[in-house]
Image (cartoon, rainbow, N blue to C red):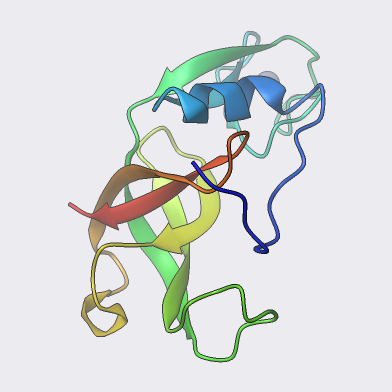
Length: 133
Ligand SMILES: [Zn+2]
């Protein structure tokens, strides 16, 4: 793998299980032991019922595009343009802000089915991006 000038997430004790799983090609999400809600981004408490009993579970990584935008003028030249930033709703009911990769931006549509595709960026960070299913 490589290093990059691209800005990358900095794992915390709370988020490290998520990033460790991404490095292994698995998508984890927290599920509330009390109400069953899936919670993302990682939290100390359930957003639905405020219980502090959240357990990491594996997500299937399938979902659809809720909305997206195509970036032509990135915040840093470390990004290759154009690229797609999207909100994806996973089948478990939670949403992620992510990139749609592996396809020209002009074929991405709202509602398009997608599945997770892991993109290594550094030795520590593998991003859960999505591709059209
Ligand atoms: Zn809950």
